[in-house]
Amino acid sequence: IELILSTEIVKVDLASKILISAAKTTFTYEILLIATGST
Image (tube, rainbow, N blue to C red; front, side):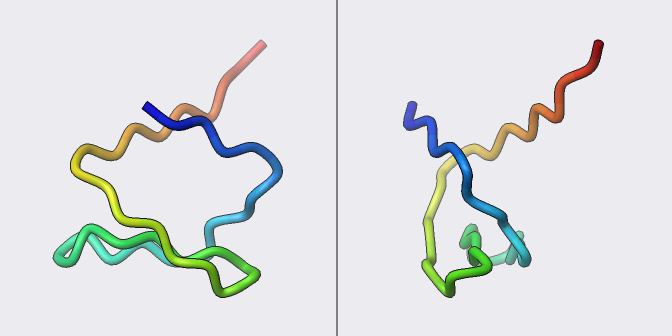
């Protein structure tokens, strides 16, 4: 598990399992967990 803070993901390619950030950095994943939080 890798926690990456202060990074805006602007695109998710579900077929290729790739995330693309606003800074054009790409991340690959095996399992994607999106936790938006709440109060």
